[in-house]
Length: 103
Image (cartoon, rainbow, N blue to C red; front, side):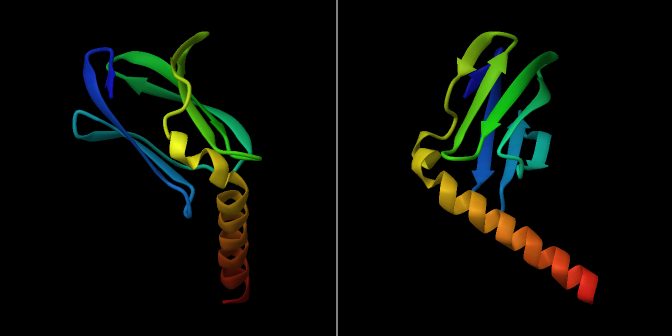
């Protein structure tokens, strides 16, 4: 995807809940998305954008600049897998937390 004249790649791993944004080959944003609704700020080509992540009841991750919509759904195929991926990532994190506390 081209954003402000720069080549930007958005990569989301549903089971781990990781969103990674690369611009011109360098990583500009990498986060574990675990909240059902959250806005994240990211700087791409010296411009500030917001990534709006809605993970429950369906996945919808969009890119915005202020009130202007750049892309409403970065991953349209993930729309109907929200309940499954959200619950699996929460269960995985709970399991990792319990393993750390017991080990």
